[in-house]
Structure formats: C-alpha cells, structure tokens
Length: 350
Picture: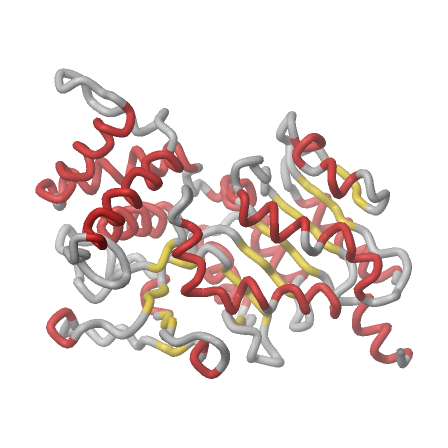
C-alpha cells in the first residue's frame, strides 16, 4: 500500500447514525413519532386512517370502547400486522400498488410529514449538528438508519455537497439504509403527477443491480410542500418500516446495503452514534455481524477503533459481539460537542 493511500484511509471515517443522533434536534423518537403521525393521519385522511386503526385494534386486542394508545404500542408489531394484511391482498390480486398497500403507503406519508415538520429549518439547527457536518469531509462515509432530513439541512447550511449513491467524488457520502422522507420508488403514475415540479433526480440504482429506479427530490427537504392538509399524490416517501416486512422493503434499496461493505475497506475509525441496536432488528445486527468484527482486517492498517456513543443502559450488552474483539470503545453518554472534538483529534493524530 502506498503512503498516500494509507494517509487517505487514516483520515477517512465511517459514521453510523441511529435515532438518538437526531433526538437533540427535536425530532421525535418512535413512540412519540407514531402517536403524532396517527393524529395527523386521522385529521387529514380519516377514511383510510380508520382502516389502519381497526387493524391496530385487531393487532393489539384493543376493545371497541377504547382508543389505541399509539405512544405505547409496538410499532414493529403494527407494521408486521399490516404486512400480513398486504400479503392477503397480494394473494387475492388486490394489492393497491407494487410499492405497497394503501394502508402502508399512507402510514409512510404521515410518518414522513411528521418528521419533516419536526425537523428544524436551516437557521434553527442546533450548533452541535453544524459542528458535526463541518467536521465531515468528502472521503468520509455516513451510514444513517434515520428517515429525517436533519443531516441534509445541516450540510446545506454549511455549504457542503452530499450524495446518496456514492457517485460524487467531491461530496459527503450519505447512505440512508432505511430510506428517506424525500425519496420515492419508481416514477409516479401519469395520473398521480402533480402540477408542481418536484425535480426528481435519479439515484442511478438501475445502472447497477436494481431493476426499479429510486428517485429523490431536494425540494421535499423543505416544509412548504408538506405543510398543507391536502396530500400531493406524487409524494410517496420510501421508508423502510420495522417488522417482518422489512425483508421486502430493503430489496428496493439493496444496493446501499451492498456498497457500504466496501466502504469499510477505505475508511479507518468508525463512530456509531445513537444506535441502540435492538436484538430483534435482525438486518442491522446482521449487517454489523458481517462487517464490524473484522474491520481490523479490511485495510491492514493497525490501530483502527470503533467508538460507540450511546447513553442506553443496555448498550454494552447490545454491542458485546464487537466489544469482545478489543478494538471498540463505549462512550455511555449522550452525543455532544466533546465527541466531535474527539473525532477531530483522532483524525489529526493519525
């Protein structure tokens, strides 16, 4: 390996972001998010909401004289139940579209709308996120399991380019493995296209392994197109929902699950921020099991470290399979400015 390549690898990092990363910006965690999304869903599309609500009653055995408490039910179980309903429709030739059932598509929309309206505008972003993106450079890779546009807004604010598909050499590589509020799968049907030009841009997945293209709209990062009670039918957010249906959803952006594997071979330290890694999140856990225990062998460069930043009490148990390898450090605390300082110091001393 040349000295130039070794220097480049040592200065490059992989950042892996979970919901805890965005929480300090006011973006709701899953229980609050679901409750707020369902309230908006009920107000704006009560007909289809009642169908989803009735399925939730069946799923959680809620009596007719009681309301479903969406702040406390299992989001994963609800999505799995909706996946079963979609399976029945598929078997009977009644599927709403090839991108999912009407119930799931509407649920995704109202989750996305709630997230967009909860994400601070560029001028309101807390300083820690601006400092974080200022620390990023074009050879870093960010793997995010979040749907929110916080990082995109912060990058726009500081004037840094980013790319979703690894194809921009002078851009931050932002890979959103669970999808994003401003993505859609496939082109909108001609009858569903709106009068507003959403400036969809191709992710170029079909240049590689995928048969159906993914698109993103920079305009949908803003609140203006969402802050209305009337849904634009062309907005169909691609969000990978939890539960057993995830196995089908991630096939649509499988290229992103494939490419980060080689990203580990061209970066050095790894920072996992705000990702609790639940034991029943089989895909994230499998992705980690297939990669993180072996990062000391990817590049042949010694001294590589994994930093896990998370205040959760069970974080050591959840990441035991990495900790036991001897090259991981647990920072059992909330992400703050001292961690950005640590990242900068670690990069500069290599």
